[in-house]
Image (cartoon, rainbow, N blue to C red):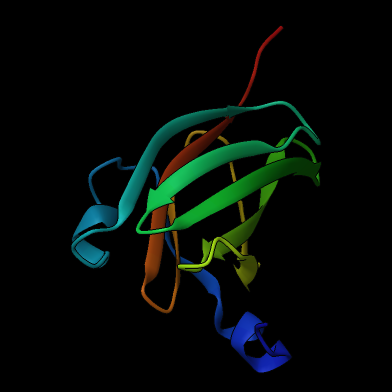
Length: 115
């Protein structure tokens, strides 16, 4: 389980309108999820490799801005799944963002799914 101090350390390390900008600041092996279309409140699941996965859920904040909450889990050798971290980012749709917690780095471009 992650302590409160570790959760505070989990933060957005970069958001940019330039799609190629943040990749240079991420560690090698960062998982690029690409453009993700969110429907508010609907969780999406992704494999991060090496026994880790994440669920990302978005919600609108102040107008059209978006907050994405992540639940990163790790599967142990015995098959037990445990919480690894729960970071979140706040940004505008269409901006490339990254979140990094320990050895896990995730990059994505969040946008709202249009009906």
